[in-house]
Length: 142
Image (cartoon, rainbow, N blue to C red; front, side):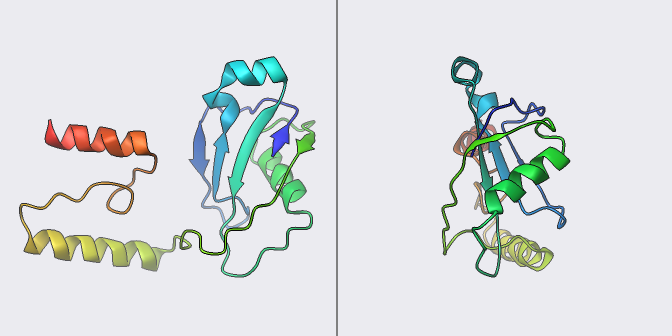
């Protein structure tokens, strides 16, 4: 979506684990490209919503902006300039405690059996973006 007001948060992205809100992961492009945002007056944001059931697209964008305002990510007077819903049927699994526990158990089992094995990256740690993965690899092998 594109909003007419700059975000109040300084983050580039964040995860929301509060079940009260529908956004799971939010990327604030204004904080990644502040010059472009200042030049255009457009503040781009991507909101990823995870669901086991099909999402109802009607009103989802407006609801998401309202929730971001409620979370103090955008000012109360923020107005939606543009928005589109892009469903991805086979997206990420919903992050649950059981999924995290299963992942930790598998990692533990593999690393116990293979002492010279290093597991790095998105599925083996808490890093997400490629630059974080590359930093993790550099730190591990430096």
